[in-house]
Amino acid sequence: MYKITTLPGDGIGPEVIAGAVQVLNAVRERTGIEFAITEAPFGGNAYDQTGTPLPEATLRQCLASNAVLMGAVGGPKWDNLPVHLRPEVGALLPLRKKLAVFANIRPSMVFSSLVDASTLKREVVEGLDLVVIRELTGGLYFGEKRREQLPQGGFRVIETLEYSTEEIERVARFAFELARKRSGRLTSVDKANVLESSRLWREVVSGLAAEYPDVELSHILVDNCAMQLVRYPKQFDVMLTENMFGDILSDQASQLTGSIGMLPSASLGGQVGLYEPIHGSAPDIAGQNIANPIATIMSVAMMLRYSLDSEEGAALVERAVSSVLGEGYRTIDIMQPGMTQLGTSEMSRLIAQRV
Ligand code: NAI
Ligand code: MG
Picture (cartoon, rainbow, N blue to C red):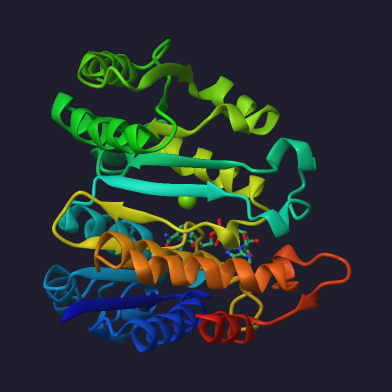
């Protein structure tokens, strides 16, 4: 019996998680896979209830699970809290660190029925299928930070970007292994012309290449990469990068698919897998039943594949999403002329039915 913890969080989080749970339950009915789902407070709402965005009990429960499915956290209501209490910094980052999920896998895949949903030309995105592997527990997000008041007025802030050989090597191995299973092409993204951390990054990644002779490794500077991603994204297959570059590039890659509401993620490397859509809590559309639940539902597919050992369940979910899109159903973010617009809960229910 697998244990799944859901952390709906804030904003659209609870709406998309409710949809994903419906789909999971449909998978259980179809496949007989056994799991128990327990919800826990997390993020801004948890702060309101308990005074901390990451209650001790929530963390303990996550650590005792096989998989954690998270919605999103944060929002304007909590933006002015001291930084360690803000949901993003006080809940999400420590959760990732405590679960030791250093490899964040973000596939960006264009469904054939959505080739015209992107703002980019059809020929640029048609058939696109790439994966960004973002290092998730190091870099700027976890480096020492502080703010000092200056005697002459104003402030000075210090933000630290740290990586060790070991941190780079373990995520790079992940990327080489994945590239080996896919096209055999791996692009490592850095800023080695300026950053010392990137120079080490490049050295370590290059040093591993000899162990993976079947993988063709290339390096690209992050600014050029940002440009190439919109110019000719199909040149990429597996992309490996550090935490902040990966954060930015994967949002960018999401637009190739039509909407950020389409992109799932899996964070792996520890005992427990963490699954979440790449988007945030979208306060601008929260509570309106218009958020696209597909990113979270596709995260469920990744959870079935990587943590629940059910390739069958994962394929069922992916096929259900593909079929609903093929039948012309859309949420507003991917709406196109002549298609049928559905709300979050209706879209989720339909995908669950197709499962
Ligand atoms: P966001 O990803 O929440 O929203 C960006 C834009 O995309 C918005 O216009 C939003 O309406 C749209 N969008 C996002 N998800 C969507 C979905 N499923 N369906 C349709 N449209 C969708 O990023 P934003 O606005 O920069 O951040 C909002 C809050 O979320 C902030 O407090 C931020 O810190 C937090 N955040 C949390 C993350 C997490 O929990 N993993 C990740 C990113 C941001
Ligand atoms: Mg992001």
